[in-house]
Length: 238
Ligand code: ADP
Ligand code: MG
Image (cartoon, rainbow, N blue to C red; front, side, top):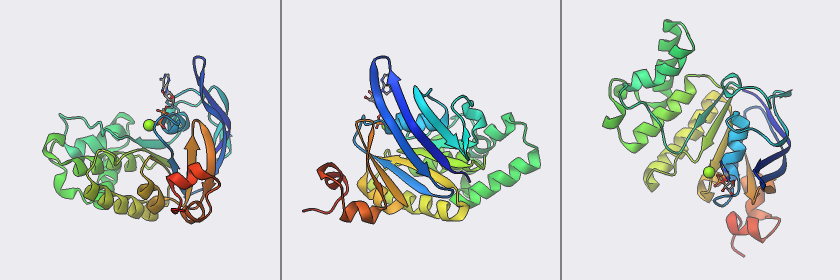
């Protein structure tokens, strides 16, 4: 568990500024959802937090420490992507264990972690299967399991459910909620799906063209959107 702070974070791709000085404080254990239309900078922001993308200005801070130059592997966070890049030739068990093995974690500890993740996500029966023998939802569970075994301080999710059909998405929303309650970890979740944002978030950050348009609880944004853009995205019809 950790807190996270962005101070005037900027991102330029060449001459194009795509993130325009974002300030944001995220508390220990908070579930934050970034929403906004395609191209508004959600993934870029998440990747800068993860250390997968250099920042062009400002500071990213974890637990009060500036981490701008800290490599991704040392930030103790885990990212789950839309396309669950599992290793196709490895069993589910091996997929879960692999990252820890490369980090030279002792075997009994790896077994404990894998069992715990499998229990949480109810994938115990799938441990000896290969990814090709799993449904989309099961694969996404394994991808989340791979994040859990690392016991990250912060979970970052980049539209992890958008490849799933409506019913599975709903199920996985419930599971991610349960996961958050159980682990109490700080979670930052990116989506362009309003329902996902409303049901998962402690606070929603509405992004538009690389700027924060409004931050608030789902109810605040729904009942008191600051402007038409937020209302159109999340607010009640008026
Ligand atoms: P979102 O995830 O909200 O759809 P992105 O963060 O992927 O948005 O992209 C934000 C903006 O940055 C877009 O205009 C996109 O075209 C641009 N962008 C993203 N990655 C790169 C890159 N590697 N090079 C140049 N432009 C990029
Ligand atoms: Mg994106």
